[in-house]
Amino acid sequence: MPKIRIEQIDKSRLLEIKEFIPEEFDQVAEKFDPETDITWAAINGDKTCGVVWGHQYEHNKENCFQIVLLKVLSQFRNQGIGTMLFQTAQEEAEKRSVQVIRTNFKGNDTLPVAEKILTKYGWKKPEATMYYCESTVDKFFKELSWTNPSRYASYESYIHPWSEITPEELETIRKTEGGYFAQNAESDLLWDKEKVEPVNSLVLRNGRTLMGWLVTHRHKPDTVHYTSIFIFDEHRGSALYRAASVKALCLQKEAGIPKSSWLASAKDKKVLKLWNMLYNRIMTKSDTWYQSEKIQP
Ligand SMILES: CC(C)(COP(=O)(O)OP(=O)(O)OC[C@H]1O[C@@H](n2cnc3c(N)ncnc32)[C@H](O)[C@@H]1OP(=O)(O)O)[C@@H](O)C(=O)NCCC(=O)NCCS
Image (cartoon, rainbow, N blue to C red):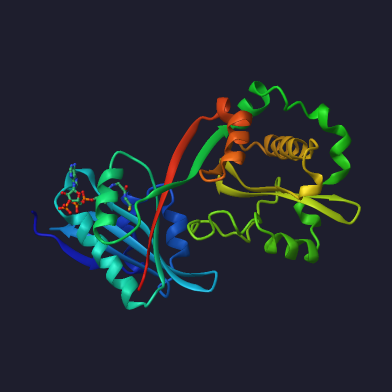
């Protein structure tokens, strides 16, 4: 095994770990909060070969710790570095007296190794929780038969821009299960849920009655993430869901943003079936996200 030292990386040194999170680096670095975020690097000579990043947060009144990132460069794998970094983060969580330690990570060819580390230290076997999917606005309108906007003209009066939302409606959305804070809330640390995308987030209402909403976030400059589409029970079964989706995609098209992304829960088989039926053939990318956790004694 090479001579490895583990060093805590404070905010001023974050650039040293940029190659571990190239795409999200700027967002992550900006949001780094020394009170709640803590990062270590595994260093061999002057080469950073692995990183672990922990984040403390509160969820449902529980004190939680999330391992946001654990990654070892491929040429340094299978030498015990991943385990060392993992142990460092786990010990930190224990020091902080958290009730739950979690991790969410994208499935890849090292899943059996991650599973080995986690289960060895008493964590649950990682379970698939989410599918992250991407498509394009172009494909949405060209390849799906139900996306012609003229079919939904009679729904126009129910669809309003997010800028029109009332404080009462916002409160309802926050409280409702399936609301825009609910989806993957504990793992979506990169996104500020309050920064709803104004281009195509929508409020669905009839007169003063809130019927549902469609909330998006700007995931990357070229991608709108469809965070939450929710229709109250009594308005389901109509074409309101499709009308709102088509409207949002039209607005996205007008704004010149080419890509869309969404998460589908692996556990909600009914919704998953619907999502597959509606979007499977236009998907340009799909990643499976896994979750594991350990409840602290
Ligand atoms: C998961 C990851 C961090 C592991 O790092 P690593 O430095 O290779 O891990 P370790 O060397 O400590 O190996 C952990 C265990 O897996 C075993 N292992 C590692 N690579 C292996 C391989 N290719 N074949 C068989 N066993 C292997 C090790 O022998 C060790 O087992 P042991 O505890 O019985 O000794 C690394 O593969 C990685 O960066 N993957 C991509 C990112 C990722 O998926 N992160 C997971 C987040 S939880």
